[in-house]
Image: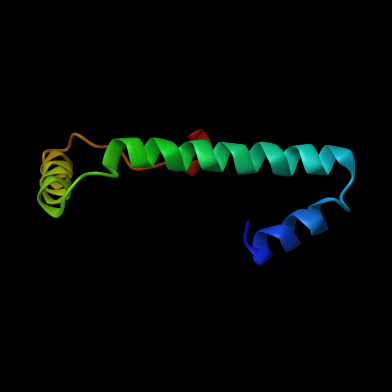
Length: 73
C-alpha cells in the first residue's frame, strides 16, 4: 500500500462510523466501475477504440443519441 493511501485511510479512521461506511461504499463502487471499464476496454487497441468512437459519432450524426441529463443518472 502506498504512503498516500495509508494516510487517507488513517484520516478516514477519524470519521464517524456512518461516514466511514459511506466512504467505503464509494470506494468499492469506484473500484468496481474501474474494473468494468478495464474488462470492456482494457485490452482494446487504438484501432478498436477509434472504430468505437467513429461509430458513436455516426450514431450522433444520425440523431440516434440523446443529451446526457446528469439528474436522471
